[in-house]
Length: 201
Image (cartoon, rainbow, N blue to C red; front, side, top):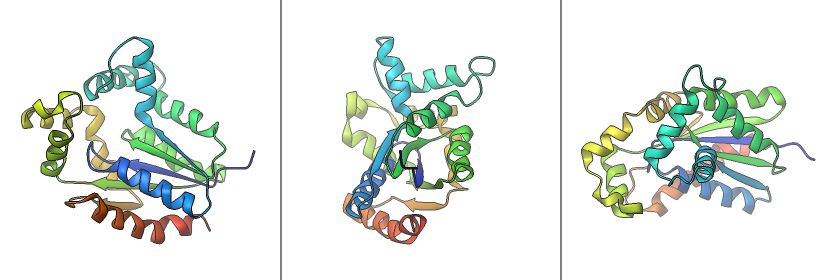
């Protein structure tokens, strides 16, 4: 199996635009002839919830992640290690990891160069007002009923508080306070030319 060449870790608070950034980066990479695998850290949580017959959703995922990360439970960084294990089973040239949110997630991405694989952390930020407006507009599973106070409380959960700190150390920062997806995608394309393509040369 040919060795992976690059791992991109995407960090950002919910509804900042990580999914849009990841999808556009994947399309650009494939357009240049690279194979790409895309993964979300939350996939492992959703797979676990499925096994228990529990519904998906931000609240349940936060509770499960906190239980699994609780001191004295599983080994530290168990979710991060599970994601690395999943990623390394894939033969793609580039792996995109959406949802870097714990310091152990960041550490996993940062340790790839020691294994001969380049890595970058891309931080996608957006104002709280923008993110809340997007939550109400998409109305997934009744999200439009979420009050601003409830939204702010979710942002104070341990799963979310590390994200801006990780973002302060990111290799690439994208600010997504745009009115349209197309405007944000142009920023992603510029970052691809400046940071991603050189990392693959």
